Amino acid sequence: MYIRQADLFNGVSMYFVKQFMDHTTQESHQPGDILFRQGDPPLCFYILIRGCVKLTPDEAGRKVYIGCHTGDFFGWSGLVGRGAYSASAECVSETDLLKIERDRLLLLLDKDIDNGLVFYKNLAKALGQRLIRAYQLLSEKEA
Image (cartoon, rainbow, N blue to C red; front, side, top):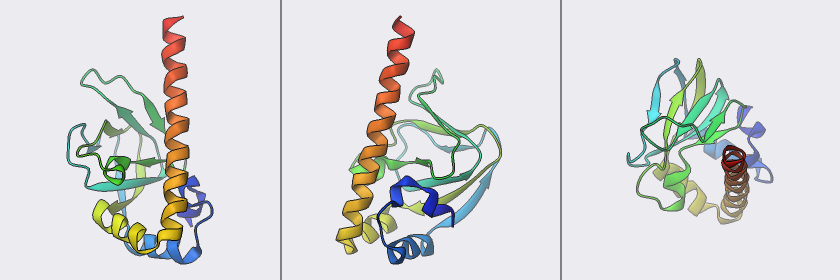
């Protein structure tokens, strides 16, 4: 099961994973397909199965993150109360994803508080790692 490869699900129950999977759809995309644009309402959350997705925070298209590993995720803005996606997401290769509507996921997280807490801790850890990578990239460019 692809979802178990996602660090987001480390420590959550199989029942929670099954509930999550019951609400997802699988999508296939081509290079150049846009999943969402910066500023769009954050309506969905995505988990990568195969391929690569580039995140860019501005019109210039400067990438800040590229996800190419099974389990990488995109569209987290709606899970932390942001009113809009913080970056645009573009497929850079043939890509397969799991997609879940934000409201369905939030309901699942609210209904299962114990697993929801573990999920959010994993989300915070992963976003912290992305932030550290972004700092490293910025410091390399300044040097």
